[in-house]
Image (cartoon, rainbow, N blue to C red; front, side, top):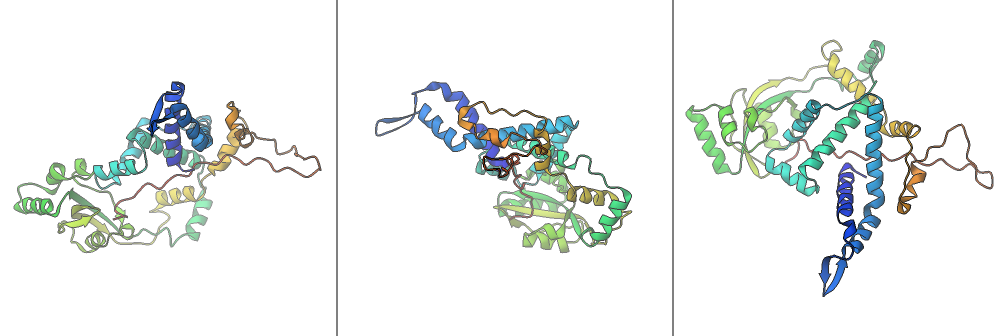
Length: 332
């Protein structure tokens, strides 16, 4: 069950709770025959109820596991996570289209970002290498840890090629800087930053024309308009760095981060551990099967069936998968 489905399911549950008491009021009629709210709600619960409840329990277990370890996500950290995730969309319109395609409101999307960030902090908690562990990791992964060729560019994204040509003409006149024009005309989320995007690996850029501009456009020069995802982009390369081999001294911070990611704690194990000290009681008789999933049994006490065979312990709750956040400009 993905976070998308968890959030959608939670929204569905909210609808059920909101209209659950309305009984026989119709939600639709078919040839004069009413489909009542109670009938509709029953079908929603049958279709999504168990997944809704399981997803909500898992998310609460993540929150409690984080709290027990003193892990918090500050509002400043959340704002940075939201800004970073949103900036990966080319335009506000594309961001809103993504929300619509995933059946999410912006508030639900921000809660999704919050949960992803909190789960990441939880998984990385306490994962700190010793000098010996870090050196061994470096030696084993030296080639992969090298720094790829990167580019930093600024952009102005507009709706049509004609608009892009007008921006180019104004830029060539010298009456305004690239940053000024980006702030004035760009539809991209980078508008308020003067069109500036952060440093990124050139090999991560899959759009052929953008990759070509990132590779060959002289630093400080501006590209011709490039079509990208229904918009037109004007790019200015601010900086470019050549690929280089990794150095344990120079790249220590990045190597530590790679080590931590490679050795992150399993969220499944964390939730299983949390269940040992957290009582999860499924009260609603319709979802009693989940009591088996969320009941922990001490490992030292074997469980046997009537014939003496060992009965397998219940599965640990499944941690919702995290959908990939779209990364621009990796997709056209």
